[in-house]
Length: 252
Image 1 (cartoon, helix red, strand yellow):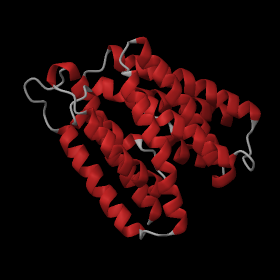
Image 2 (tube, helix red, strand yellow):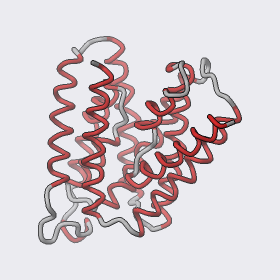
Image 3 (spheres, helix red, strand yellow):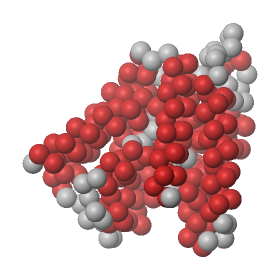
Image 4 (cartoon, rainbow, N blue to C red):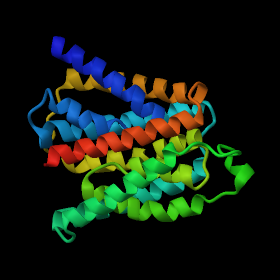
């Protein structure tokens, strides 16, 4: 009972953070759940994917309440992620590309995006898309290689998509809202192959799903109402660097 409480409270906190940034919670749920569950393939991964989809979905609801989602752009972006992320996973399983090359590309991308996100806002930066020209098509083109790269590495595409959306001119809060929608379908589609072998504890799963749903919705509302766009960019820059370094440490 105590373990379930600790896991639920911890997951709630992680869901609030992920909801604020328009991400699913899997990036943090996998290492967190691994502290309590020993079976990565049959317990941690399927539960994390389920939580990722639910938290991203409720984050979408939180952003939608503030009318921050451009539904047309979100739908287009989600179509690309659904198509290309599985391609990356297939390439990884087939060992067609050497992992060292993939990681070099990913690290360069992460640190470049983090550097750009941490840069001080220029005068006029942060205006609405309609005020400064729409370069969403650039992000849409980049979404394909980003999704393949994320599939190769087993990380969600949202980490690279969200800063890309910001850098092509989309206001950070709108970018987080669009990103939340774009990462929702791949989470549920990636869960399907795991369903036949997944081992879910019904009571624990329900508690975590409720905590994740509430936390991600709250996080999205916090961003919508209180977090300045520039601060959101900086928070995301720190997060993607921290998670990337953690991933490297666990591999070494």
